[in-house]
Amino acid sequence: MGLVAGPARADGRPAGGGEEHGPRRALRELVGLPDGPPGAIAVLQRGGDVRVYRAGAADLESGRPPRPDDHMRLASVSKAFSGAVALQLVDHGELRLDDTIGELLPRLPAAWHKVTLRQLLQHTSGLPDFSESPEFLALLQADPRRRFDSRRLLDFVADEPLNFAPGSRYRYSNSDNIAVALMAEAVSGRPYEELLHRLVLRPLGLRDTGMPRGYLLPRPYLHGYAPGRPPEDVSTLFNMSSVWASGGMFSTPNDLNRFMRAYAGGSLVSKATREQQTNWVEGASGPPGPGRNDAGLALFRYSTRCGVIYGHTGNIAGYTQFAAATPDGRKSVTLSITTQVPQAGKPELLARLRQVQENLVCHLLRR
Image (cartoon, rainbow, N blue to C red; front, side):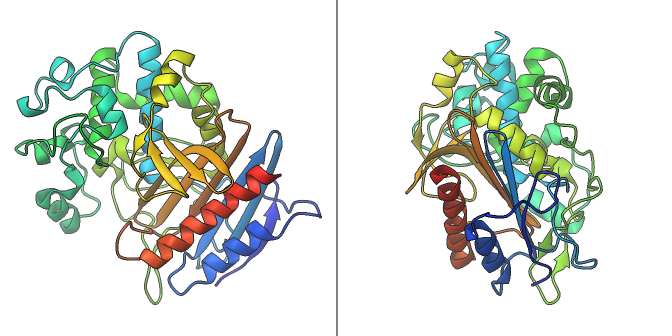
């Protein structure tokens, strides 16, 4: 399907000879599936050596190949960014992992008041998921570009009790990182977007990463598609105010790779905070990443047949993301595809995607 391109350097130009065919073939086969994505791009980095692999098209209308400087939706990988903000505030002494919703966000339901920042970051809070609210879904379906008040998204589930006692089990919830961002605002007195730029984007030089205020994407961008004949371009279908700190960011493959090397590699936080972040519980990211998944604080551990890597996944209309790095940050891999692979409904495609992710990890770690 579409144009197939081989390995490239970080600037998008073809890489030199001698490159192994595994990643290129894997992406080509993924794009070639009947329900596969129209386009795919992977960035693998070992030290200073960056390799880019791509298959299919960034835009079905033009047929051009994906590029590492194309913008794209990050989906739930945005949670890693909100985690980076919160954990740096912990290092700065402005937040504590045991701070509670009741202490910092007293307007939220009293039934939620004992939930801690630690539990929010690890998805053991029990908060009901606002994105599953019938009222929220009806509003979104009626007008996908509706502008929501992002700081009131939890109101959609404010009349619901916790799903379980805080800390007693794991359950992935989009509400968790909305509450994390609100806590960050409460202790700093600054908008979350400002904190994100000051603590993460600017220090790492992420000039092509941000939090959009509406439904547009900066150009050039990877066009995201919904399955169909022909596929429907849904790149700008939804207003990102509907997911905010839980899934609303954009970036590029190059920027995402740079961020994950620092974040998963532990260089953004102190050793003490890193030790807390990597206290793992059994729990999968959404959608599940390669191998066995375990949950830390806004970070997942993927134990594959070739070794362990830390990172995050995400999916949203038109996009599915996987970004990870070795615990020392020296090796990293990102895979971006231009269709949404849900956790349910397409088990064969999800299994194939996870296989490709694991093969990329193995290619990264075996070199």
